[in-house]
Image (cartoon, rainbow, N blue to C red):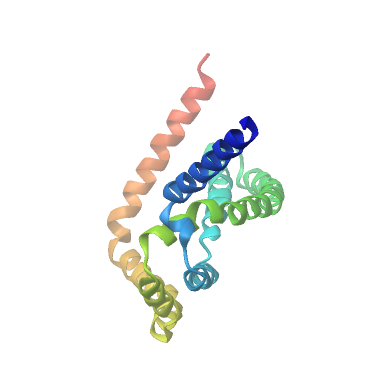
Length: 187
C-alpha cells in the first residue's frame, strides 16, 4: 500500500512540476514556428552582431588618435609618421584577432538576448512589416545614397565654416599640446 501511495505522490509531484513549468514558461519560449522563421529572416537582414565590430575597432582608433596627439610637437613629422605606421601594424593585428572572437561571441549570444526580445515584443505581422522595410528597394537606394549625401553636406560645412573653425582647432591643438608637454616634463 505504501508503494501505491508513493507512486501517487510521485505522479502528483510530476504533474505539479509539469503544470508549473507551463505556467512559468515565458511567452517568447512558446513562439510559433512561423514566428521563429520570421525572426531568423530578420536577423539575416539586420545583422545585429555587426555592432561588435565598432566595439572592437573604436578603442583601436582611439589609441591611434591619442598617440597622434601625444606625438604632435614632440617629435619630427618623419618620426611621428614612422611611429604611427609601426602602431598601425599592431592595431591591425589586434583588429584581425579580436573581431572574429567578438563576432563569434555575439552570434552565440543573439539567441539568448535579441531573439527573446523580438519574440516578446513583436507579433508575426509586425515582424513581417520590419522585414518588408529592410528588404525595401527604396531603403536600399536610400542607404546607397547616404555616403554621397554625407560627403556633400560635409564638403559644404567645411567650405562655409572652415575660416571660423580652423583657428579654434589650432588653438585647441596648441592648448592640449602645451598641457601634455607640461605634464610630461614637470617632475
